[in-house]
Image 1 (cartoon, helix red, strand yellow):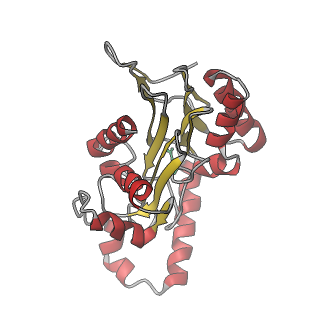
Image 2 (cartoon, protein in one colour; image 1 turned 135 degrees about the vertical axis):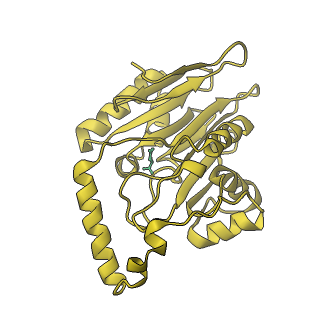
Length: 266
Ligand code: ASP
């Protein structure tokens, strides 16, 4: 659990990925981030959705898990929850869309939404499908698995859009009786097939991490033309990284020696 939070924190802090400091902006110019974390011994989980203005949504997710009776906090109350714990704030950046005179003079909410829809449709035509969500899975010496993910979402999101990453069973799942999964990719497809839990169910049926991931990702493509990548770890330490995107950067470390990092997996 600590390894998952620390790894994701490090990546959020770097600004190099679509999470934390580097999070995408939604079409109104605001960064709204999603994150979740889960541990497999007691199936405890915490998540935040549409959180704003903090560097480490993954820590907010862990605090939801540890300090509340809930699993998911969303929107401004999630942001206030993080502020209550004095989590590191993101530096205030002037948002071109938010601060422009044009947006101040916007004729009203309906006109604003129409512009956003038009922008979304336009950029959908030119979308390159780049992903940069960060995620991690880990196994500790007691045999407990954990998984987490943190993201700024996808390109061209309407304000308020929430992806798979804060949804337990979709972007993340961990159960000592099956394994741990963390997803990246287009959240809308991942949600519709509850991919993380579906992969865990196949692990529980005895499939290897590689086979379970491959089968479910193939199903994602064939059923709904989805696009995703998965980190999959079984409680006996076998793991696989599989993707149906052209690339997926991932690394692993078995506790000794140097870690391995690659940009593509079979
Ligand atoms: N899965 C994330 C989302 O849909 C995006 C990503 O993984 O790049 O919000």
